[in-house]
Length: 306
Image (cartoon, rainbow, N blue to C red):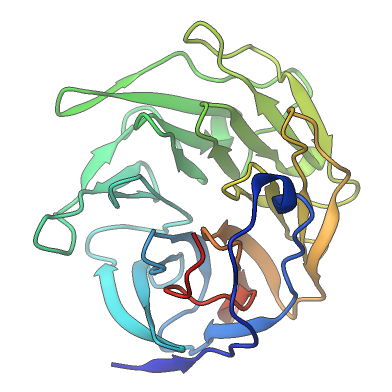
């Protein structure tokens, strides 16, 4: 079992919702993994309630887990390999730890087993989506898939032992839904409209989504490859071409600040971003030949942060 050194600079303390919007995630970077034997082209990333980092590697066609181990991370091994999935680029976890991986032609759903580990995957949307990229899971188990080929977000709801497809969240005439999607606890959907340099927001009402976004956040010249939310509803975006992570701060009333830079000047392009319950930020970066998994922040799990 390999261990990767984690740098710890200060312990975290609990903060209120009002303080959350002012909290600055320190640009203190820790490399979780940059070994060419374990990561080559990391894309999808998610962190569970225990601080375990799940990473989908497009090149190796694997999902690898890194477990917090005191002040280090332990490489907990591969969950899925290229015999099970192909070209995974998106990854999400639901509230019980089930894992959803967008791969070449579908979303592979890995059910968390009571005794630990994951069951063999079932496929979601295999006859519907084409080259799915981002995937997100809502509080009620609804699954949202960014389908760039069809410039739409596919929406599935749990039904019995499977899923039923709902009406797609369709783009406006100028939109291009490309690489990622996120959803908050209220069912609001956030879409990375990559090449239009925007984040589009869709609020659910009476069980349906509008055909055009309720609000749009401008990235400037940035290309939004990844979008995610923290526990307070602040929006984090991986700006691929801008080599940075930016954040739109939520004022609690559905309004957002202009984007502020959380981290910049990465040596490789950032693909995806995740945020844990203590507001540490996790980033996957890659070029054609190498990749890294990076943590930004300095709070350890188990330090009393609620």
